[in-house]
Image 1 (cartoon, rainbow over the protein chains, first blue to last red):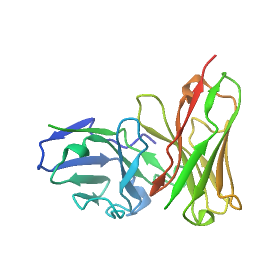
Image 2: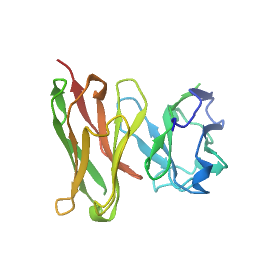
Image 3: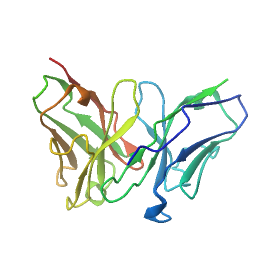
Image 4: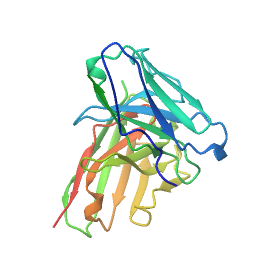
Length: 111
Length: 112
């Protein structure tokens, strides 16, 4: 199975909102909730921002939200801040042989 | 707090072996499935292998199947990745992870 599809880049000005999509989630697996989003700054390890489609770990600002419809998941960042500039990866359950599958990553630029 | 600390990376020649370790703390390691994920230089994240909480099921990416082996020692809260027949394309930072926590990674460089 191919990797999940994300836009290569998105951008927004401080205070604006951006949405990053992640398509190709296997709908044949049912309406599962195993979708996570990771933020990665250069040279750093990925950090979970959203898990189980829309759950936010403690410490993650509520500016970050997640959703899923059909075979597409989305990460929305509202009230953009300079520190949000990073790479973002979606990750989904892709079947019993591939518990995790990642998207290709999206570079977020804060203008 | 939850901590995952990888070790064992380094420079290795093609065809040789290496074993990575990941020591966990701050949570009940034996209750969680664990994963290895890698990131080649300048590339995206690639899932490598997964191991159920009790060691009952192991899954591998096609790119490493037959060469890599994932295991765990719940008494030591440690996850392992045995990497055999290493290739240049295995060069990457290797992370151990559960859904909500990742280690800092360990760099594996396969080069002659």
